[in-house]
Image 1 (cartoon, rainbow, N blue to C red):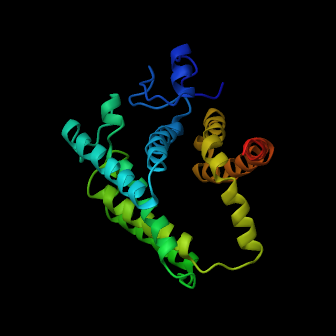
Image 2 (cartoon, rainbow, N blue to C red; image 1 turned 180 degrees about the horizontal axis):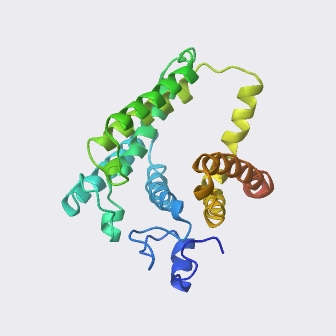
Image 3 (spheres, rainbow, N blue to C red; image 1 turned 90 degrees about the vertical axis):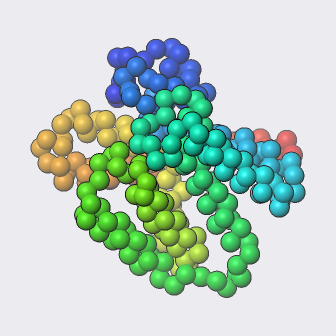
Length: 254
């Protein structure tokens, strides 16, 4: 009911969406499932398949194979569609070879660092560092206001990736503290996947109520608060019970 594609999608679109197969919706100019943000899950499934092959090898050989495969795919993609292209991929070969795959290599790099760095290593004041990174992004955006297409264009995308990498580095290696704020942040961090998947339903409801026309600020606040509350409820009532059930089944199978 809340889907923006509710009047145009058919059975094939539902099947492709459940199977996470990229396809072009009749009412959309790009390839994504009916729940739009599911396009990231399509890339995740691709990475998991590559990662599963890497698990058959030793850790070193598997890591090299995974990273080499990701770079090879992007290299192939450069021959199909320029890396600097701002248009969305419209075919499966274009979709499966976009530069965004390289971000999985960055994640692997952080994993290797976490293993190799001494346990005592910690970034001081990580929250302050993350605020500084956010400030840099706002400053960059204000000096050159960006359209949605320009945000996917080199070198802008490189700047975004570097700032995001700095943010993730601070969150992974930040000096941890135990307190109420940290405990609350951890709970909402656990629920972030559900928030990500379901926040569009809150946005759709607010848009249909035309809240943005009454007050843009109220729309932003309502979207932030509503999305997190709804996502947290989905996490507690749906995601966590499912994870607990499947974890129990896997343990019994093992």
